[in-house]
Image (cartoon, rainbow, N blue to C red; front, side, top):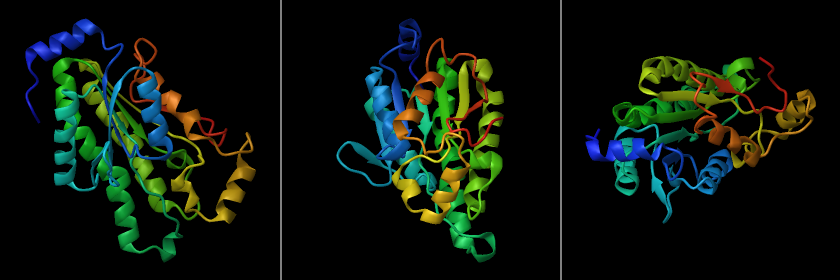
Length: 248
């Protein structure tokens, strides 16, 4: 973790963190992550994308690998300076009943969908606390709350994200670093494309709205949680754009 120059901190505080903020989005190449990237750019923010499929404008990262995460965030800081907002959107989704699930499938999901969030949060939280401002937004799932057939590994990982979000929020709120999560319902993304058609048909039939959401219907929730003053009272909360699948 680098030391943040006092001048850099004071400049950002004077600016009020209202525009031109430095944003990192993991898993921002496609789906919900990509929509969130575009929403923050439209807001006038500077955005760096971390994804395991890199290209010219994307920094390569394996969020489950500690060394890879450190390297990727070092590269992001070279572009942005201190990071104001982190969105953890990287994740995988596979399908198997628990009795048929291999340990490797379980571990892969936990490592990417939960441990990856921990590693990325750890990279930014120290600097955010030093500058007395920061926003961390973790993408969970409504299945963290209600579970899903054939998705015990995914449900467990995403439930862990909710617990991590609440615990970290308690640790950092006094320093004006607000940590929250978004738990979308099923969204039309490449991630969901890999799930069986029978599962998707059954899920659509359950939804009061009768349809899956779109990535650009989720992205504004991230912008809200990072906004000032709109997001200033959200601490350890979970917002659920989920087509009515969960009504807390």
